[in-house]
Image (tube, rainbow, N blue to C red; front, side):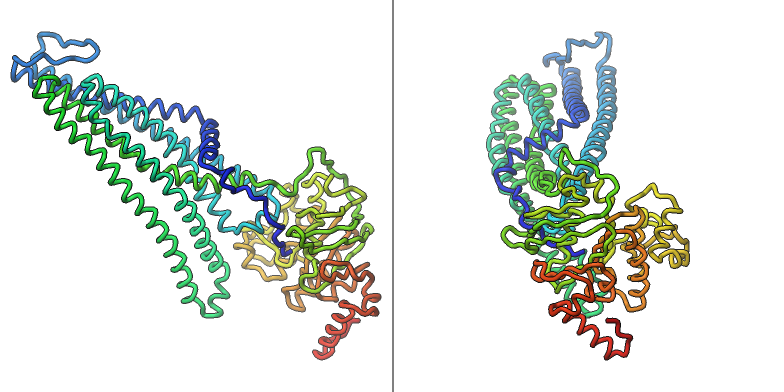
Length: 625
């Protein structure tokens, strides 16, 4: 069945709904769902900061001990936490103890770093990414065909893979790193203040320009990331279409042309990325330059303070320089965080667009699960259109009795496939109603109803799984006996046994290793496994040869027995056995009757019958009127 765009999808990607503030709030809610690991990550990072500061203090203390040993006139070293070494310890012994303490601190810091890394990886790749992917996949299963008509598979693939990864970047690359940045800067600033307040104020005066610079570039980068995702979607679409259509490409010797098209799309993505990297290449050195100015202030003003005797060398200047170096290194991370902010917001917008998409067709809260249907179908003034104000079906009214075979005939664009798409409720009518056994389709539980509808399309999709699994796709609990029974009715049992491993043969992608007729018969067996009272056949013999068509038609005749069947076909050999035939013209029901009645009545069916009889007569084949 060829499904068309079901009208404009409600616009959810407007600027107001997906403003930066609202996206950030939603991402914070996402992080709150995993607050335990987020909290552990923050605690461990704070511990790493404290261990780093302790290491610097011990290093400064070693320097002061050595200087005090070389020049006893200098002030005695200030030991942390009120600790004092035994007076009997010689300087060399004290230095060895302090050095050992520094090594122990380094080992502890390494262990904490390992724990921090493992928790962060578990949080992002083990929790957030799988959870987001599962939510997206579950939502995609519930979305109506209108969404898939509007969005290409390439865009959907990119949202489930790349965009999910970039969305979780907000948690580890923005939220955690940003919080860690604030904690780290606060801790370093406090310890520097304890060492020398005025020097701290002087050195940290460059942070205000850095904050403004980060805000400016963060707003500048966002549109570029959104555009980059769109260009990537287009490039992936070109690639996937080329792979799927490789036979056509080679058949027309169009390889060179396709290579040029892909190179152009690839170059456009690269050019867009270069524009983003150009902004980053200016932003990152600017932040580093500003952060280095603090070191200039340290050496100038701090050196003067040391000469004035207002700050010590080891526990003062050396520790302060180490803290300031760590501080400026953290400030330089603002560039990375700003980049991660816009990268994650651009991706989060595309992920939330899918999660927020309204489900056009779904079961009502009070929907009822129907019992075994008899197959009585009624259309009551049904009007349907994919776009508002552009109906493709207009006021269709007809009734079908249980067990009848209904043929649907019409020229291209007359609305045949649209009519079929309403039967399993892929779309809802714009006006009017459809009933089955007197029950309005809108009032039925969607899953329970669709399990009583078997469908075979013109191009039947098969999964890369065993033959048995493909037949049992809609009924995974089916026994092998039930699977074989369905295959026999579909005239598929014999060729399945001829496969290398019979029913356990694993099919290639989309059943590429089977003929068109074999794929159709497997699709028919899959449709019949649940013994549905309603059967929908959308031109199932359109793409097969005469011999294969004969085999499929024979199988279809057996499949139609005892079922209400709707058949779309341009070949009258299949329609002539219908109990009633509906003739559609531009979305309207213009004629209705049996094959014999319509052949005898002027109209499109009569004209097509004459043409097919003439073609058969010219070919010398047996004419069936």
